Image (cartoon, rainbow, N blue to C red; front, side):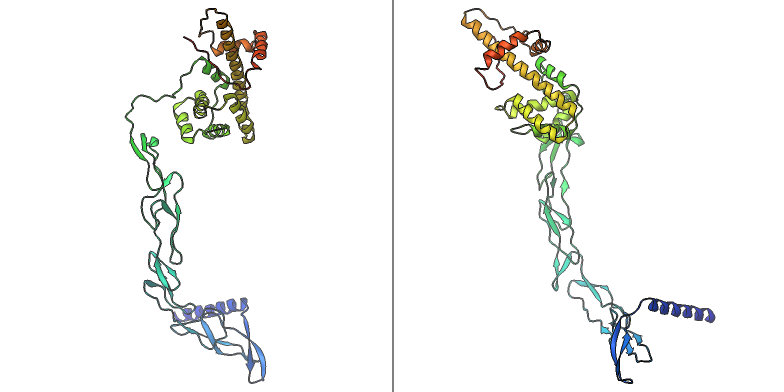
Length: 369
């Protein structure tokens, strides 16, 4: 057993010497009294001090630091430093003194060191959440809750919470939340299925025919609505439309909402304005082509209505009885006539009569009994 222990110590000594030799120690100058000249000595490693300086014929002799003393770096000191750190009020000993490090103190939980004092971590007020928790060395960082998030408590740890999605839970939104309050949900007492909310007449049916069956994402619909001038259709309206309307009806529903919000805007000009901007958003080309067809159709329909009004006024002025036949005025019939070019002569007369009385395309609907 003693033989084994002796071999182990020898191997350990060789390993330590090899490690020290492998890393060249820093040097320091020392005046050798024996030779009366300056010699270059090796410094002592951390955890030790210089017990005997080197000479021209001998190396530096190092000794380990005694208890409650330490040396943190390579040094040429004649003694180690005393462990002098004393933990103050609201601090505890995180690590006791060692031969290479002084005693380490740290503020207790919930406090951080500012100068010489352990201060309490800041508590974020309602409407603010913690973005960076406090540590023993730094204070809490608070930030106001962004849109769609809230915090209703004063805390040094709580982060902003996302508003409850009432519809995802099968409820409806009763009160919209804000930065200090969550959404308030209530049971959806309306058991009847919700509808898209648009009545498709023959004219709108023709518009749907031009649009086809677009399967657009929320990003596509939001980009489309953002490209139109005037007051914008909000994201909540887009989400509601996507939920309640079929794919083929969504664009028409949103265009109707835009027209309601912008009663003073010219529909055709608004769509043309939007088309110019959609091209810069890498919008699907097939949808852009469909919207172009819709604009052409609405333009033909508008011109027909102008002509119809002129025709009615001419006949009324000649004291002839006029009956407004609603089925004849259906826009889908007019669309087919102009598309098949069966009434191109009538259309040319229409342009001649209307170019002097209007500069804007507006829907003019005659009064019908």
